[in-house]
Image (cartoon, rainbow, N blue to C red; front, side, top):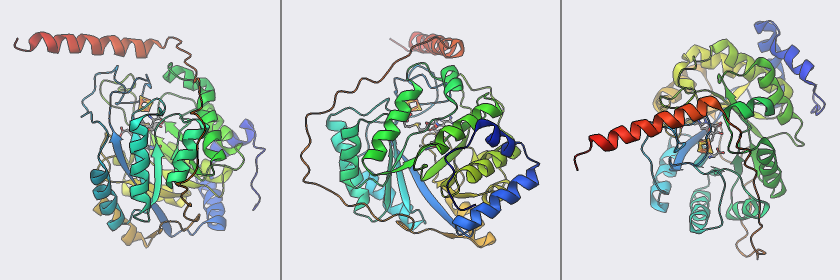
Amino acid sequence: MNQINYNWTIDSIMEIYNKPLLDLVFQAASIHREHHDPNKIQVSTLLSVKTGGCSEDCAYCPQAARYFTDIETNDLLSVDQVKAAAERAKKLGSSRLCMGAAWRSVKDNADFDHVLDLVKTVYDLDMEVCCTLGMVSEQQAQKLADAGLYAYNHNLDSSEEFYKEIISTRGYEDRLKTLENVRKANMTICSGGIIGMGESVEDRCQMLLTLAQLDPQPESVPINALVAVEGTPLEEQESVEIWEMIRMVATTRIVMPKTTVRLSAGRTNMTKEGQVFCFMAGASSIFAGDKLLTTPNPDIFEDLALFEKIGITVQQPYEKHAKPTQDQNRIYDEADQVKWSRPDHVIEANEKYKALAKEKRAELNHSKPS
Ligand code: SAM
Ligand code: DTB
Ligand code: SF4
């Protein structure tokens, strides 16, 4: 089937997800070959440009200030630091640099202006530039596009229903609104989610349904396996089995045939054979680099050696979509006043971990010499 289907139903997606595995992978691989070169892989390097200290309560995230996790927090990186990281990433085969900031949403301030400079710097290196900065208004999205941003990453993470069980400080509708703002500014959308947080298969398929109903569908969909980080409310979640990852990748490939499916967080828990099985099932992109944002990722040289062994080559920048044109002369109206929602319902596990973190910090302060 060559047409994009925007009319999937939850039942039809679940039926695909639950097929016998080999039938599922065969179908996904066949569709993959109709739309993509099966021997090409797109590599994005992740760079955390502002780490930790985030106001949100995302139960999976080591960067939430309210949990006690062992991460190094960092203010915004400088232009030179980002330039050096981007040059290295490009040399090692990445076509895209994805810069992440531990923010709930973008604010119209000097930090945002600095991020715009970071975008321009990477754009000048002829790499695709991606940012993931939290919620953005229409005008902020336009400013990013005018600086040369190619993609904006903003994950739905799970189904709307399950979202309420992992995050209380922001609403699902704001995530969708942000994606709409990104689309209006003509940037490509990167939006996916996480499996292994305790959600059901229906939640996973519901998230895919929501993404597949976006018109146009997202250009890239990252599928993350939860990295269970000590100190977060999800620290005790068992890691997902490779079979679940393969099913999720294959189902994503089938319902969004033209999308680039990215095998994202969690690769350190997967064997090379498991990852190649995911490539067979339609994943054609990875996040590379020594680190994801704060947690470990496979060694880039091991990734490159694997590509060589199985005969796949890396995609060059702007192979799929043209390089965006910068607009440095646009006059912006006064900043748009967005009111993002704050549902603030109670999630017991998140409250418990917040209290535990408070105790740990108090203990540490007591043991400090005065
Ligand atoms: N603060 C921004 C936001 O939330 O949109 C951008 C950065 S945030 C860390 C980007 C994404 O990383 C999240 O939406 C989530 O899907 C993913 N992520 C964060 N922690 C993770 C973890 N422990 N395991 C897997 N994925 C994770
Ligand atoms: C995405 O879907 N996964 C990446 C990227 N987009 C920003 C982030 C994964 C983060 C994993 C946990 C960490 O390293 O902090
Ligand atoms: Fe903050 Fe993003 Fe982490 Fe949520 S996922 S705590 S918004 S950095």
